[in-house]
Image (cartoon, rainbow, N blue to C red; front, side, top):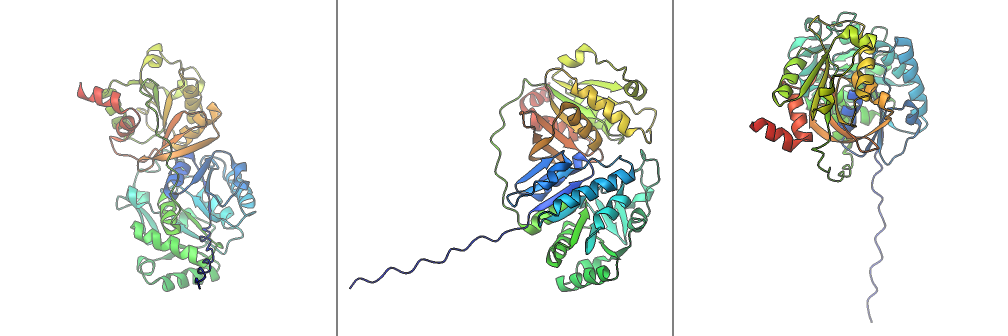
Length: 413
């Protein structure tokens, strides 16, 4: 008698991973976060898209609040949170690792309705750490650096000062690096006291421990931090791999326009690498740019590589950033020939894409840390990069990635 076949094994559904809704205060940070999460992701420039949550992918939305009045920035955060909470996502708010922008107002709005906000702005990849509740840049306390040179105010001396009005409690490194049960208990204790944990972090492993603790404690513990925390969240969740984009066709004949809106001193050396390749550099007088009287020379439109930058020889202009970025973005959007774009500085990136009517980006990958290569819905290629990121050869590396043959030929001359 023939034996009966074994009964079929019960089907086992794969575990459902919580999807992430990440809000960012500027576009370059949003793009950095989209890459850092490491899985299928949608990157939107439209705050209304927060309501379109789906477990199939993570969603990153640029709220564009970095230079808004604080009350308007807080309102934007509250509005986005109401939309996001229609589903059960894990929430992340991406802020500047040097604490610029409307951090206090936005963090207070983000904390509403949460058990606690876990605050971790360290970014080890850029040598930005938090020790004793103080942000350090290359080992120097933030308030002793020139990271706030273009701001109206002075840099805060601590996270507690930066988050004035929101009670925070520092979690020292020895607790962050202790057993998970001890870190969880400390986060719970701080939350029970009505405060928010601000763990120190010097390494990616520290941020991994912070992200893992927040996930264990449930969605009531919201995350707030830099791209370093976003990457830790992606690693901890073990996101499914993003579908590889189709090969990018050669675009050697398409003009490449660099729009350098950052006030960072290092931008001068970065641009010099491009002019050595034969790029046409157009430094723009800030007064003429703000007045709308700038006209690009015809030689700029004929160049394969063109760099538009704001002449910073007279020093930074605190408070003028948004107006100058808007004027620079409008000028870049009017550039002939539909060039691919390299946009440094979150404000410059946002105002340029707004002027072009681009509301969504498809992240393709990182060229180097913070330099995110994306594609627009109509096929244009865009690289966004925070103004404070990148070594002296940053723009050169981006050029080689986007135009390998022309760059190699020029470098050999």
